[in-house]
Image 1 (tube, rainbow, N blue to C red):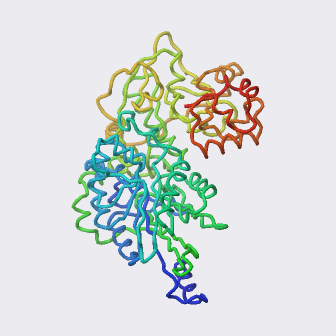
Image 2 (image 1 turned 180 degrees about the vertical axis):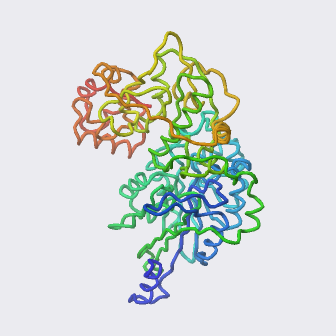
Image 3 (image 1 turned 180 degrees about the horizontal axis):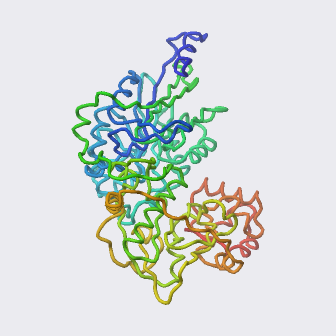
Length: 559
């Protein structure tokens, strides 16, 4: 018996009359990426590869599930990531979302691919609110408000509040020019700021909608009472955390329209409170008779087999890194460069082994990253590998043409915090030619901008695979143990200072005189009051006075 049927059984067996209850149904999608046709499902562990999703199947399933008391929501990254999304600047997806009757959506980092002006065009094409920071109205010089951070709507006699969270990766995944002036706070700060306003408008059910990770969703659930449901971004492996101990339920729904999230919220109309929430994640089966409007939108020429992949690239962090490495090696060879550096974020979807279509190639690296060829001395290479503006917890980029020195474990895939430097395979006198995405170069703060290549990453990848006909994985770089001198140099480097605005408790405990309790207080202070504006502000934290500040002031920074 399904969870939804169990909820109906509860209605009929409850001591309270059936008329005392209302069931508000919430249906949500995530990471649609303008995928109109079925795509390979990598999320079902142990099952043979199959196709799921497609806009025709999604339309049919949503129409079957909608009730008179339904909210249909999307939590971001809906616009770009397919040939159709790219050619329409994302508006092919707002067309179908309008047709289905979506009531609200939020923006993911990838929705900003074409800049703020296109975000305005997306919002104007949407027949539903895009929940976002009103700062966007200011940056776009709008006289009338187009973006709002939340909404409260009556559904079947129940007031439902929906809080939209801006994706914290917007600035990391986009070029500076695309998001100039936009400041994105931590999700906890965003929701803490908006929750009182939603409550003040008498919201009886509160939903948080955001393109955030499950871990960030859990922090919200643990930290902020008064939230009933938190909808997070799609994950490669489906996860569903149901409400426990009165805390909010944290849910996801996969990606690419392959799955649909459904939550039935049982609300007592007399007691005016939520009784229970039952959730399901449903597979979207490909439709045998495609919708004519969908068929009309599908671009021709992308579903032809053009290459063969010797191996499968599973879309987890390691699989995406391997695919990024394969693309990086191809770029290095094409440009006769010494190195090519690609962050894992350039890869979106996985690739199956066997025959590969042009569409699958596009979907695997769809974001049209601008590429530059620069010439730099050896002393600058580590800055390109480990930019100062990138979170140290991110996975190391794929580096073609060199190996890496790593602190600690060398058997797994390292994160930036443990990478001590590049180990060149063939050192030479003079400068080194490096191929690198423009956005990653911006974050490294290297002055030499080199020359812009005549193709972007997506174009190169399509042409390379079609020309070579076979995709073979590049040799993985070796990870060598870092020397004591490298570790010391890394610690003495200014970029290696501990950023008290982002450091976790374990990292803060590395500071002299800072134990677990004080580290916890620093994190709690940051969550309550927002980012530190100066290193001296840390003295506002209980347990850190002038003497202790003198010990740590030269070891910390704020960014």
